[in-house]
Length: 219
Image 1: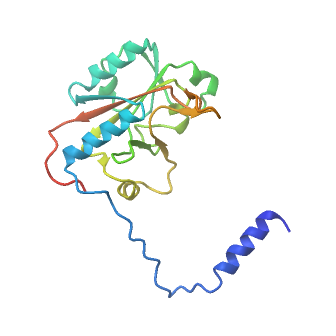
Image 2: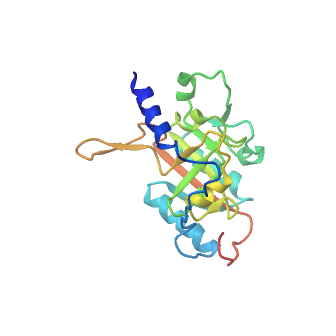
Image 3: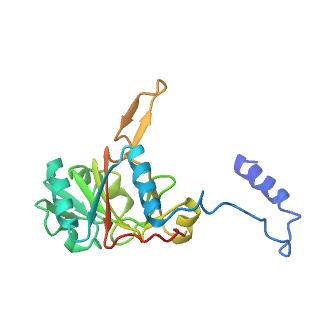
């Protein structure tokens, strides 16, 4: 008998007395830790992103194209990866050559591109996490793992939630998701931190507001 068969056998035995009519297990998790206004939630997101060594910028919809142009120029990016569904106006001011997300692109080809610009699915304030789900403005997972510089646009306050439970409610469980808390990093046994091992060395997050956040409590 294989290890897999032994484990599955134990699971079956453990579930043998579970009936369909049994009441569901109560999961009284907190939806968020404390009540915050929308503005306070956005501020917490910015603080936690920075704590994870992401570089946070604040801008408006009108200023976004110029902000993206400036970030790419500061990196000296001559080529930038863009998902197929990225709003074209976001890149309207950029001087870099656009490289479109294509299924046939090889890892070697993607490695030659300095930067990638994407949107996101949701951003979690309490954990300082950006979640991508492969949506049209995010593209395939690999395009945000190979380039050394990732510029991620977060719409404020629409895409910002307080907690992980709130984020999960917005995500489709059938879609692949990538959860990003700061630039890629790892540590060896002596706790020496090395960035850029499993993904971008630099994560820049643009918090884009169209209108001023209200004082309503975030839900």
